[in-house]
Amino acid sequence: MQKIDWFMIISDLKKAGISGREIARRLDVSVSTVVMWKNGSSPSYEKGVKLMQMWESVKI
Image 1: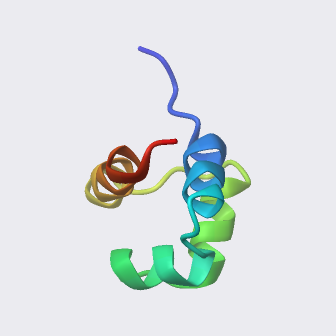
Image 2: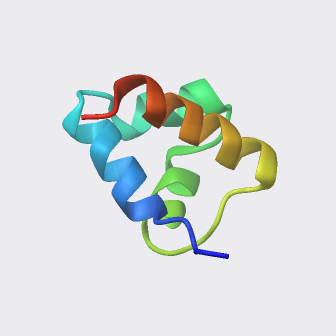
């Protein structure tokens, strides 16, 4: 099973114009949680699915 690259996913969302604050708002987490995911932590399954759905909808 391949590890998901949360750094890339969050970076792509930011490139698409979605701020870290907006990602946090949409997922009902703190901005610092989004930063932790970008720095190597993994979201819960539920938050990860939502983050990937957001990424798929704006994929560059």
